Amino acid sequence: MSTTGEPAITSYAKAPAKTVTAGDVTFAYRELGPTGGIPVVFFVHLAATLDNWDPRIVDAIAKTRHVITFDQRGVGASSGTVPDTLEEAADDAYTFITALGFDKVDVFSFSMGGMIAQDLIVKHPDLVRKLVLTGTGPRGGENIDKVVGVTYWDIFRSVITRSDPKEFLFFNRDKVGKQAGKAFVERLKERTADRDKKISNKAFSTQLKAIQRFGRSEPSDLAVITQPTLIANGDNDRMVPSVLSEDLHKRIAGSELIIYPNSGHGGIFQYWQEFAPVAAKFLAP
Image (cartoon, rainbow, N blue to C red; front, side):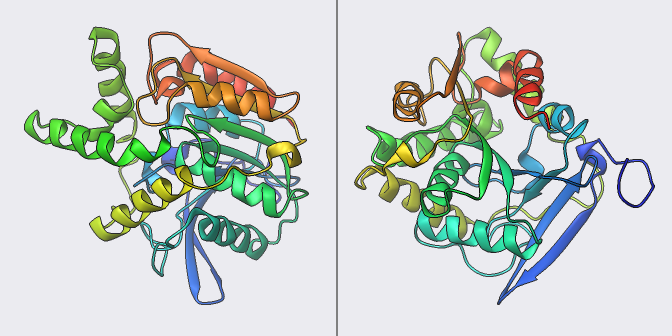
């Protein structure tokens, strides 16, 4: 139950849209699940807004946890401009979290969101209690900087086939992958009211360059990540090579690693039926 006495909303499709202002930025966010205690803050991927989280995963976690999703500065309904570096994006995330009054959170992250989450913990190691890193890699990770070419090529392929780019970027192009991609895209449409604004082309380009810069940077000391950490990916991630999930596993002592077979960058979405309960159990209060 929520602290208001009303039943907690546990469907992401019905989560209310909210805002909080910190300094000169107004952050857009949604929250659901039972309030009280430590929340799970979701860090989203490249070009994504509040509407890009798979409701099957969010809803599974929100059954027992207070879940918060948010738009980065300059994305969707959040004000301001997208920062040039992921370190700055991590600073924005810290500003958002503290503006809501939290000094301890759990983090669920995907792709670029996982890179931002790492930068956040490197700077604020005591802020995060539990960490989920999916479809992501470490600062300086080999071939992360090639994401620009992969992304633009897949966008081109999606245009000529009149498909959603995520079907190409997140999923293999075999029969199973194509079916999983279309099912994922359909799930993202389940929210019909009060949907978010799409990211602008300029904001998208800025994020892409920030990821490229992250990939070409000196590695961070991930020994500071001592909290329980769950790492997951598909075995054929073309955006953030799957081997980088193995790399994270080696760098983060005591971390758990799941690699799903015959799947790409969106392996956790293709295998949501297996992954969602695992993630919910890992993040259990």
